[in-house]
Amino acid sequence: MTSQIKELPEAIACRGISVRTTNNAEISHDTAKLGRLWQKFYQNHAGELPEGEDIYGVYHNYESDDLAGAFDVVASWKVASEQDAQSESDSVANASNVVTVDIPAGKYLVFSEEGYMPNTVMNAWESAWEYFNTPDCEHTRTFNVDFEHYIGGNLEYGQVDVYIGIE
Image (cartoon, rainbow, N blue to C red):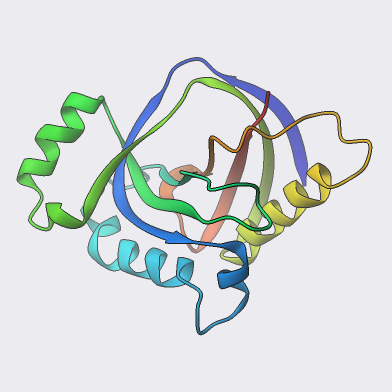
């Protein structure tokens, strides 16, 4: 696992499908929603994307911190702009299920992993949680927007960068 600070120079507009969940809900198979979200995304949207298109998992609308509060997750793809996202939604057959979310410009601490999904992304998140829960942690999470960037759009094997928004 590697981590580094990256400055995102401009916002990234994304379109995708969303669920609201908590980390506690994700512990139990009966209440977990993220696996089903990604399965639905893969079945209904990933095949419509150009080969090798990057995929984003956007975490936003945090109720509080990562221990207690609910948050939204959007399994998504990048669109050129907010305006393009809106015009695209008009042409998507199941547009009522598709939402638009912006990843804001700003400073992020990035945790990178490579391997088989979903273990690779879970390992990246574990590294992030461990880092932010150490007593001598140098950075403070914003709990505004965090995101997963699946490089090359491979949801089975590949590299994922988990971007955690920091002050």
